[in-house]
Length: 215
Image (cartoon, rainbow, N blue to C red; front, side, top):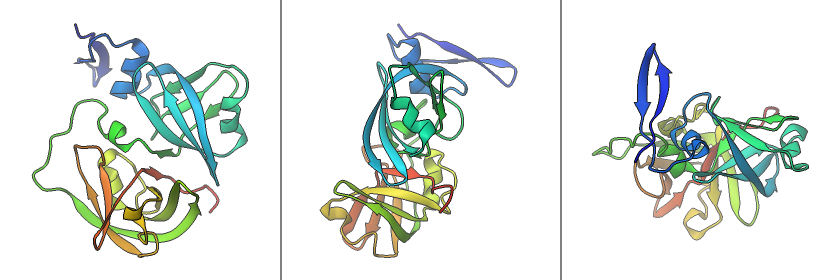
C-alpha cells in the first residue's frame, strides 16, 4: 500500500503518493520535496580537475553529482561521520555535523528528470543549438566542455547560457567537442535524456555542471 507524504503548499495540503514500501529516506530522494532531508552514503568516483565526481546512494535512488574540489566537500569523505542530503538549492546540499557542500553538477540526468510525477511525453522532441566553446578537462572516461546549452533548462538546470557538459569518451562523441556547435536534443522519456547531434554523430550527454567560480 502506498505511503502518502503530505506537505503544505500555498496554504493547502497536497498528498504526494510514494512508491509502495518506501522508507522515509527513499521518499525524500525520490520526490525531491523542498527542504526534506535524508541520510545517504557517498562514494568518490574520481577527482576530475576542479571537481569531485561522486555517487550518492540510499536504500532507493542513486544519484551521481559533481562537487567542488575544495576542503569543505573533501571533508565529507573524512572519518565515519553520517552524511545527509537535503533538497535545497539547484542540486541539494550534502552535510555532516562538521561541514556542508553544495553539488554543482548532476550526472544522473534520467533519474533527475524522472523525480516526482512523470512528465507528459511530447509529440515533438525539443531541439536547440548548442555552442561548444572550450574543453576544460578530459581523461580516459569523459570530457568536460564549456559552452552554451539552453536546452538544459528542460530538467531545471539554470545557467545554460554558460555551463559545462560531460560527455563520454566513446566513438559517438569523437570530434564533437572540437566541432564548435551541434544540435542538442531532449527526450522526456528513455535512458538518455540529452544527445548532441553533429552530422552522423549522436553523442549522449552524461551531465550538466556549473563552471568553476573563478574561471
